[in-house]
Image (cartoon, rainbow, N blue to C red; front, side, top):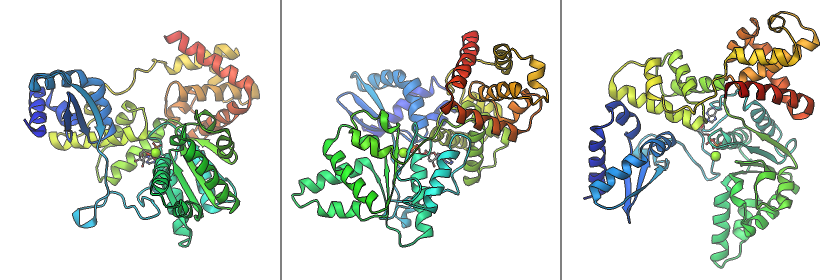
Length: 439
Ligand code: ADP
Ligand code: MG
């Protein structure tokens, strides 16, 4: 049997057990890319579908494949790489030029929220005065939170402002591979060096890849120093803080930490909703806000998952010809959100009120004396981080406050938490009390 035929058979045997909706939503666009020595590689259209199939259907798929091929099978799920296609073959998804920049990743389509605003403002400062203010700029976060997007946005904005600027975007893996090729080809590494050391702006993605690779680190250290001395801007992105990348030489950690180090946090509900609104508009999809809100509530992970979920939803709606509703979203994505501790807004403000010995009524009142304002701001912070409430809702819970007051409170607490250990202990105590009560 050919791969395609096997996969077709797998899908039709699943059809007897799973609902049409599940198949249309999560199996659309999947394919069996190889089946060798009992290892079945399954290609999925995006991370969301890969994660979902891995978590929910790998056992089922193993059994089905086993029955069809009469041999024991294991499964691996991979995400199909999106390749940019020549224009005549259809619409270009992303355009990449020799500087490695994707023109579709820019500041205009990067939605700003509490979790990424600091990163964006530093990135914009870098664009305004490359090589001067924040050099290097080191950006880190978990996957799918916009690091790569921001690196390209910086490159594209500088390119627009200054056509002459020599810009290079390069994932650390490519840096390593090109270095190895240069060494292996027997020629001198002069061409390699010229390429990386003659730029004004070097954007290096996924620098954690350098960990444990000594030759690459040595070369990168020298590249970095040369660029830095020449006043070129270096922007780096990684999945971790420089000091947490194990097997990264101390001298690189120190260089990487020598400028501005900023992280991007998990997106909160407001940002997730804002991103969905923008992506839906880009797709020309008319989805009501309550449908988008429901999706934003269900998918609380990273932004890549959020994009995947929106596509999944649009595919589902068009294949089923039903109109979008928040109930539909809830049922399609019900297995997605990791179980959250069910903390109610009441739990949170009661805990804060107890801890600080302030009456609930006073906490919600208009009173603005210092000993009340701080606990109120802590309550706002906890409502946000534990309750995942929107700004508007937090304002309501705290006695009808404006969302700008809440933003101010959140920013203040977030800032202070990094500097004030007493506050950190108070917040931790409150958090412990709240979570302890509900677990
Ligand atoms: P990372 O490099 O951190 O893993 P990416 O930059 O690849 O994440 O982002 C994953 C996807 O999410 C990309 O398609 C990106 O365009 C999108 N994305 C991330 N953050 C935002 C944002 N704030 N606004 C709009 N799109 C975003
Ligand atoms: Mg990335």
